[in-house]
Image (tube, rainbow, N blue to C red):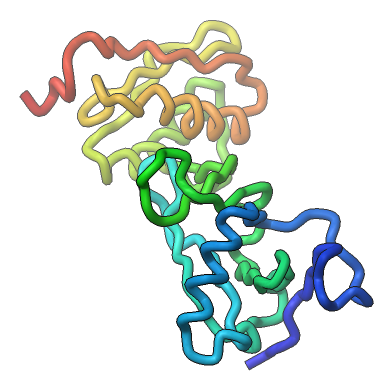
Length: 221
């Protein structure tokens, strides 16, 4: 195993001779830091452990996470390993970008236990795949829906259709499990619109033409 991680240290790190990073992937608040250090002391050989925070997948429009105390000597090349006070924080390489500017904190609601990870980054619900599309705007949109969008929406019982094109404006409707769904508008804005704009840059507007007032998942009624 390669144990030469990317060591990043904050100004209060005990390793003052190591240059501090411009940006830490994940910041731990003082309140959370106190609680985490208290929990770490109950572990075997706490001095060898860091808090490893990684992204394990997605759930709806958010990431899912794994937080665990692990031996930071096992970190691999490219991982971010840095100090926050007396705590070593370890973010695996494949989670660094998606945890950029995230904050680990205690819950704001009184009496609520655990930790809260506030992350401004959101996953791409369509996977961020770029396709080689050809033809008119309408033909390109049809290809994109068939090859990327609808296979992703099918897992949630939904689909998207092209209603029409007006110059560089594209009208999309969502059906199945997406019609009447509380997050379908967000899916269109954050997923389908992003995918269309990235793959078909000549499109200037993506408009949701879905009749969401038709009822919750009417195609299942």
